[in-house]
Image (cartoon, rainbow, N blue to C red; front, side, top):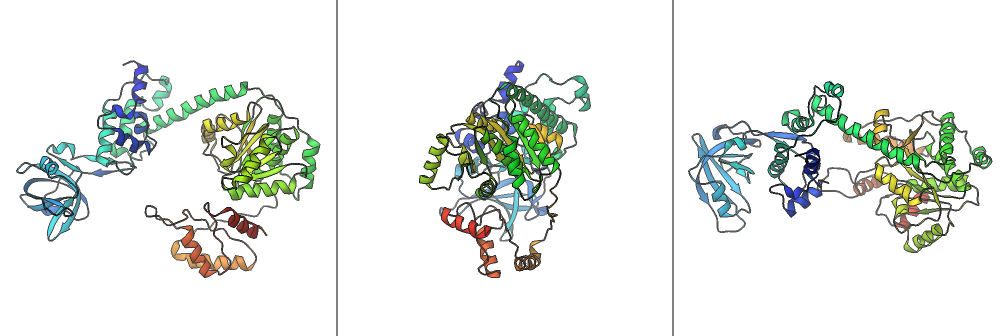
Length: 529
């Protein structure tokens, strides 16, 4: 195969693999596995060692073990709900292989009487006899079982055995690729090839071996290729010409002068960098990075007012409705009364949404705050000139490009994040963007203190909360789930609300994504009073 064909192999459809039908293909897609290359990048999380074979008398209950036995007798009850059994033995004792929902023909095929069979599974004990229930690993060829088997994060419906079988097909048929690195770079990784690196990556003994040459070689490949892609995207972005914004410093400074605080040096510096981009004939793609409370929001709002004063609309997207509302309230407080400001979310009433959509299309709204609802297809802007995205570090290059395209060639993009990102990683994730960093902390900012308490020490947390409430402070208690889940062992907001309501009667409210709009507004208004 030539190099092009080799790549086509890796990008070929999953159905090209033996044993992958429509059902298995759809199950794999649930894990975002759409081709052979996707399968290779799903790394094993651990492994099960089935290499050591035990005699029946030496089996340990509750552990996964491998045993070689001879099937002696079938027991197929005529009552549907009862399991099928196969009595097996070796020279040291007896063990039952138990099967639920299995056909007699299938069991007779995999466990023929009188033949030596290797079986592996979790050992149980019932009525003074060992048993293995629904063993997945059964074979006359013990070499297929007596080895270490990788464990992957699987979707329901695909067994570990099937997944490993599918993956081994790819690894055993990996084509050879021409090297794309120079000899000097390859020497740093002891000249290990891409093929060898992939094979080493999936060996059980190498799980978590991040300092190995094969792991670092593949990591370098990924980072380097991302640099190259971002470099090309950056070149294309630089070629996009736009109508430059006119920065009215008098109007900008009049807002700054009315603030109840002064801008820090870093805030002023990053604002100048953004203004320079806005007033240039080239499209802005900039990331504003700074710790929580460093003043990113005020810088972005000042950039917004400069775009509005140039005759453009601004869209300000936040990850949650609460944060969008917070930004909306701040803008209403500091912006001149002649600036038309509005707020929209997925939970807004249909009539209100329709009205806002019409205003945006007719340029009757200067700046709109909201969540992802801002960028639905039905939302059309008359003259969008700036998109601000708060805490959307998960947005990829393509998503950022699509958001910018919604506003046309004259639309600039500003991303904000409080996530501290190392310089190299920033270049990888945001290589298509320019970076502004606010390091300086505002003088009036309070010191942030972080404490950690075990669940058994919850009484200490409650004492702290009571103390804070008594001095007029407010508390956020964030839970990972709204309701209890059978799959996830996490605290739910509903249960925690009931618990805290008993501890602090009439002082606790529950707010989550499913709260209706009127109740949500009432809760937020009461909280902000």
